[in-house]
Image 1 (cartoon, rainbow, N blue to C red):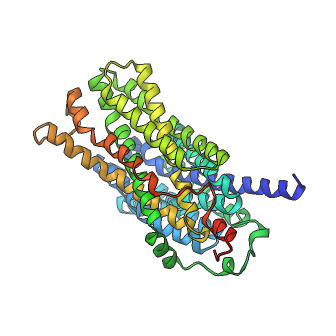
Image 2 (cartoon, rainbow, N blue to C red):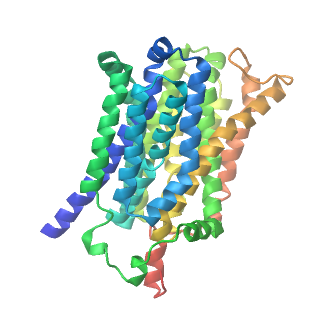
Image 3 (cartoon, rainbow, N blue to C red):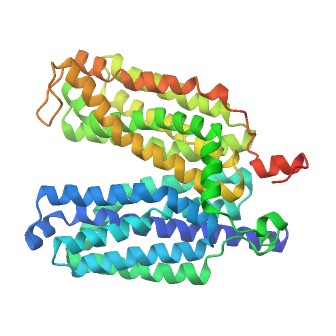
Length: 432
């Protein structure tokens, strides 16, 4: 490898590492209210309803901004977008740290949520600009893995920060760090390598945001990939987050702490599954066989958890890890949706699929609740609900059915062989 190639590879890693650091820092700000819950109760007399409303602000603002964030990242230089988004997070955290009014805190959380919508998509955009096409899936998987693993460790770290600095000091510190990161984005982050800035007349034209959105929406492959991702990921996340611990507690008589630890292995599997599947897929230059493995593996695993009784704690823990492993493998759809669209619309396409995946996970809990109401004579589930194993098996049948349906969508996708649309078109002499 020549010195120039080594330097470019180092710069690519540096750019990616910066965006991951931004992503992790902003995620810490979003997790902070949970870590300082008692402090907010004692200091500002927060109620449980207030915490629910703040969670709603983080969720809805981040969700609504996913598609516009993708469009803006495609339209403007990534470093300026990151700098503005991080500034919003910094200002929001600092305002929160000094606030005494609930209304002001809601506004501050809205600023943080607005900025946070750009972090993951911005990292994906940097990966697609700086790394070769056959490395996008792997580094996108690594970014996902870092986000999942950091969420596991950040909670305890934040509790220590709050204990040492107080809740106001914690937020002020995080706000200052976000501000420093905004300056770093402006000074050090680059949209793409210098030798790619001029790559033909088509690349120099500014991207029209609405044109890109309409192009992505009009592509049938977009909707096939969205449906595939929604059917798998919304199903497994609904099961693990909302029903997994109570299922293990009531059906297998596990203590809730042990049940929580067993289901938590799903997230470890998820963190391993996406980058591992992406690495294998990039090595063998195929996508669809890995999608089949992800779908069928998730279907077999969730069926084993639900319908094969008598499992030990160890076996169920392994099954939840495998469920995460296969669900992580299905996230290869994020790489495919970038490959079936022109590079200039890549962030818009990714924002769209993440929007629907997040939205579907929200609505899926209501669908499952209706099935539980059906098996319990109209009683919707609550914290005091107790169900038999047959109740769980009947009500949760919708989840493996949905995962199974995802398998039938894969044949409608043409194999990309890990080659982006622009490259395929150039190889046939057509205009990208």
